[in-house]
Length: 322
Image (cartoon, rainbow, N blue to C red; front, side, top):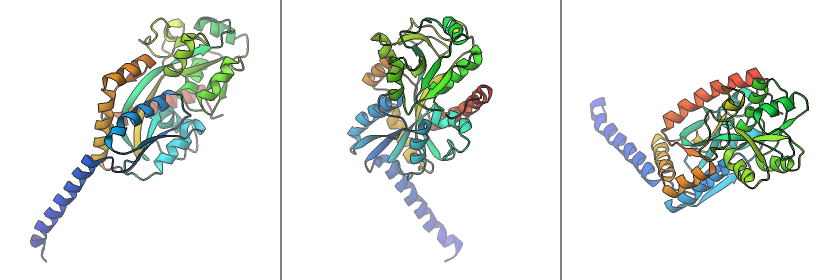
């Protein structure tokens, strides 16, 4: 068969592939879904995953949330990076797993860009600097003064998390040396904070705010550039004596690298649909989470800029994976 006779055959094959692609996009999900959370239950990533699981349950396939904590989120992220790119396994990535860890861990088992397909941004939240109620400091200035006189500790949900790097950034900008105490997740750190075994934590707003409202912990400041609408009475670290201080946690959805573009587009659309639901928006606002769905390309750009930003913080602070 000559080249000219092949053209109709090739055209028909191309149309067939296009039809298959459209069918894949329209049919997703075609099998049970798993949303991996790289930290234990109870934190902001887990909350977001469970909202998606609840809403996506109406799509016709079971949706489970699979918590795989450890190594600052690296265990769960690596699991998804090595999963089939069929749209059935997704991960709630964080600023830690997809930005900070790239420079903090010398032997990261995955590449935060090459090994993932970006789906879409989920939400961001400031961290909330909270202390044990017995700590005499009630402001950033008083805390800095206390840290220069007394050994203080700050807990985190693991090395490389925004909770960890918020403390390292605080150390650098305040000129103090508070000791970092890493945990497998914030759920393990909080009992030690309540018991006075650690001094403070820069916890995600959704997790920390209920403990502040109940009086179990005392809030000192938020780490965002501006005050949080969820707690406008709490000042920022920047306005409290460390101008320029800003550390925000963010969460986004990723799939393994190689996911077909039409499936990527479909999941992104379903993500945006859920985040636009009035009840979801209300719940996230109450928790101090700011949803901002966007395109996969916008997420890819964010990841690149965040890797650059946090590499500088890691280098200047001398932070190490503990």
